[in-house]
Length: 237
Image (tube, rainbow, N blue to C red; front, side, top):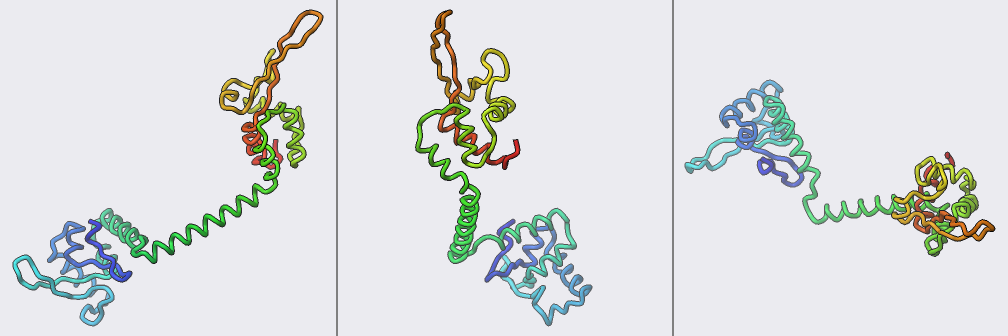
């Protein structure tokens, strides 16, 4: 049905035969309805072509017959007489055709607009990220994992005043660390597998023998991840 609608020099056009095909009507009935609608609206179709223009077309039998050429106004006017769902589909197709770039110049103009919008969004994001840029660079340039307490100090130096104990509490409450038991404050295995933490094991020599201890370390990837999480909270923890 889309091919029934034409865009010529920026103007939407259809013929009365195309209207008849769209709405499933007899062409003779559409011609009659156009004359009736024009008369009801006080439109003199013999004096103005703003809505309907009487033209000739070559029929399949070789005869020249009458039809109306409709502008967008005429299409909407006569369409109001017919099925609402088909009328809505017609309006949507017209809008789609009008909004579609028609030539290389329009395509280039749209590309320039999209590029400018992207640059504006990028500049806004850079402004938002600026307070964290130096910190992020330091993390990105380091492959070392650090204790959670050390990460809390780094956050404090960058304006996120959370503190070691509060950071541990936040990580436990948000299910990154084990909350209770002998393994309290150890990273949960799924986050170790995701590369946010690593577990460092060490042996402590005591009078009662050697003891195995574990320490949760935050990887560079984890530091970047939690910097983003905590920075988005704007100091609300």
